[in-house]
View 1 (spheres, protein in one colour):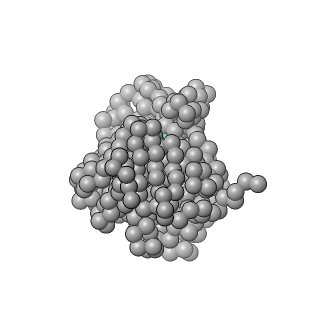
View 2 (cartoon, helix red, strand yellow; view 1 turned 90 degrees about the vertical axis):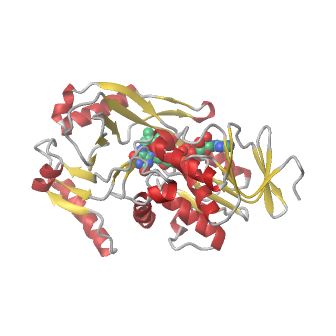
View 3 (tube, rainbow, N blue to C red; view 1 turned 180 degrees about the horizontal axis):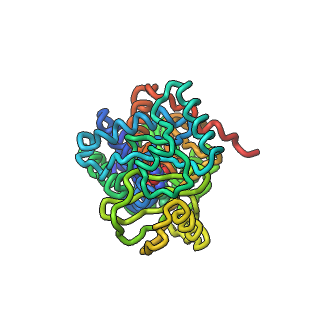
Length: 376
Ligand SMILES: Cc1cc2nc3c(=O)[nH]c(=O)nc-3n(C[C@H](O)[C@H](O)[C@H](O)COP(=O)(O)OP(=O)(O)OC[C@H]3O[C@@H](n4cnc5c(N)ncnc54)[C@H](O)[C@@H]3O)c2cc1C
């Protein structure tokens, strides 16, 4: 029985990023009472500052069912959260610069076909030129996911946050969880000023999630990292799809206002205890060189800003989603390793289904925290 000073709900979600807000909204839509505890603000971290790529293209095989389901939800976000979240289905394309890279893409498409997936489509030089006229002459072909695209990350996370609030989810913002303790079969979740009691806790704490996992005896080898982004001044429209490369670190898109947003793998330093990131100028320069190699006219574009966000990278670069190994009534959804934005809608729906019904239509087995053995 909760003391008067305690705040009770059926579920406490730790972390108000896209995944925390999506899990909370979907639990509430299933009639569950939910509190979200967020140490900073919804969308303050990776979910609000990412590249906005909505990508099924080149997913780890384990992620494909969630990613396909998520795209369907992206297409229906106005009904789910009352906002299209700036989603533009411009397509996503992954360009090969050599015949060997083209063979790699062809093998990948064959592998997907054999598994029953047809969302990745191999295209030759001519269709590549049609889709990306500004690409350099040496590019030989590509794989394209025509229904992928990009969205506005902060707007998306805010839309989920507001939709969850409107459904009755209680948000406690600006005070982090410091302890998670057993309370009978349920939990006491403590911040510096409040105590929350709940039957079930969900850990959506992003790059800080290993600390929450450890509070209940789970081990998660999270490596906090700082993927970096560059944005240029607005330039004349030249690009529709989001572009990635087979052989180089690049994610490249032109926003509707003409600015070009460049990311794709170079990382700075993440200092998660102080919520800060340090940019790596050499990595930014490498991104800029890659852009010019593939889009020669970009040599004249001026960069106006660079930033980074703090992201949880797992050793196998796929997330942890599902029940704790160490404790009943405790679940995780973290470790999205640089590509969790697109998955947000489906992860929230699937994990809520798993929590409420004990099973989910989309298997979460591949994402078990149990795949990481406890260190000796
Ligand atoms: C620069 C960059 C570019 C990216 N580009 C893409 C992309 O194009 N496409 C894509 O699909 N993905 C992309 N990603 C990845 C994507 O942004 C993340 O995978 C996703 O947003 C993770 O969401 P999350 O809710 O798990 O984490 P977060 O957004 O980090 O949210 C976790 C929240 O937990 C809170 N928290 C932590 N500890 C506590 C505590 N003790 N108590 C209370 N609250 C706590 C934090 O304050 C934070 O708000 C990118 C990431 C970055 C950084």
